[in-house]
Length: 550
Image (tube, rainbow, N blue to C red; front, side, top):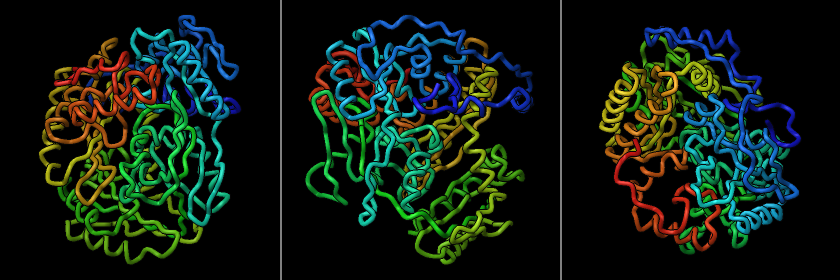
């Protein structure tokens, strides 16, 4: 299933393009690798076919001229791409499929869709690329709604205006990452926001979830690139003013950023764009220990150099991603610029790495003014593995393996204790859930002067039919460990429905009440993505969580 006008098919159950899903030979190699790690045979399971999916009839009629109750559209818009989503879709369980899928082509269509939903007591779920891993687009809305309508903005995907003087562009919210870059390239510009989901996620989704990009310092989140936002709510259009900065009260954009569709549908935004880089430099620095690599990352983050990449891979991550096979941890350093050569910046970063005990056996890779970038080094291996990882997870799901990631952020002084707490909780939970100690690895995706954003991966054998329950045990344990450690439940994956219990523990209760009051003002019928950030149902239904959901 794909958006109107798109010929290449996305998988109805797995990550990404259907034609990129690993073939049987590749899946067998995955099974052999995992089987060797677990000391047991891992079997390939037959892949699901969309024709075998059973779907209940829609509960409400499709009355919008730009909407459909088509079976394939409803199936495709049922889930995001989190682990439980993939497992249920693999099992052909689409009991929570939306009843109607709307494809608005204009903002007026969005207004009409929300008005129709309010008049029919239908929950409205904004849909970008459907890549949420936290239940952000799932129609888990309770029993108080007559039906569910997914509002897919794929047809609203244009760069509408470019201001080259201010370096800003007005972009529709349904534009996918490649579509944005393709249109900006004709102006010599780039948004420079590349999350792992880049190929399949949209500007509106990035803003709604406060997505993190690939770059490790300075402009790490989409927040940093937003100049103004336009959002349709059930009570009217909310447009913020284009300004480089303002001290006039609380910033309006900050309330829309991360609102996850609970307040309305983002339709467009003015975004800060940049000249496309001409100079690039990168290096892979090896360390005997993970602790030494983390010390290097801290020193670089606090140096004021602001590299585009300062990613830390522990020894297991380095091996799995074909970056290093000698048991070392690796720091991937990179700089880029549209204005100047990078020799001085890279030399200083390498000097800092040396003080932390790092070695760079392959030296610095650099390019300038359109020269072909060398894609044969460790950074290139990492980049390819990074893009392939979601396909690998889907492949493992088809073998009954429990495999997922979770990410967080903390201050530097807390990282050692956090790592010990989380690693202990994860390993204990994997053994309790699966009878096997499983595999746990850690990388650091972003670094700030005051702290890192560690990203963990866990893999464990599953029991047929019990994989989601096993996953839930592990997920709850590590989430509780994050809460105990004073870290955030998410650095860039958003709250959704999955993280809400821990989100409610993380933020002040008065803020939760204030946000719910704002929702009540903008969404009086409470139809906008019920269950995300605030509970579904009438105002005041929330009960503050005091424990895990495990």
